[in-house]
Amino acid sequence: MSSTMLDTMQLHLDDIAANDSISVLVIAATGKAFSAGHDLKEIYSHDTDEETTALFQKCSKLMMSVNNLPQPVIASVQGIATAAGCQLVASCDLAVAANEAKFGVSGINVGLFCSTPAVALSRNVH
Image (cartoon, rainbow, N blue to C red):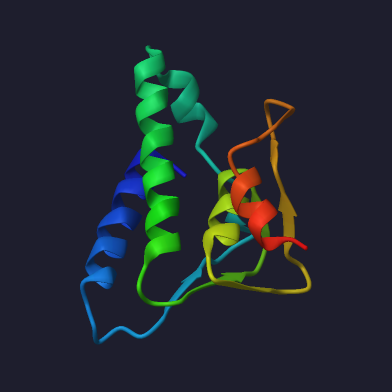
């Protein structure tokens, strides 16, 4: 999830939260992936830690907005959801997964456990 995507999604979430005529939000994607998480090329291009921190703060705000949206939020997962993508799914009120859907919390190219989704996952996986 690039910074631009996070900004766009946040604007839409803010609009939806203020719109009483919308009764439910379904977050869906097309293609092989629901979301592979953060754009690692963008993160690696940051010159300062502050830029990366700002990106993660945007992501945290987005996840909290999903969690606090007055309307129920459903993730419709057709493919892989990893790292922040998995966090997005876990932040929703309900997830509907296709048989082909896969979930993971690894930083694909980094090989580390992505700890940020842990809170949302621990609240929803029993």
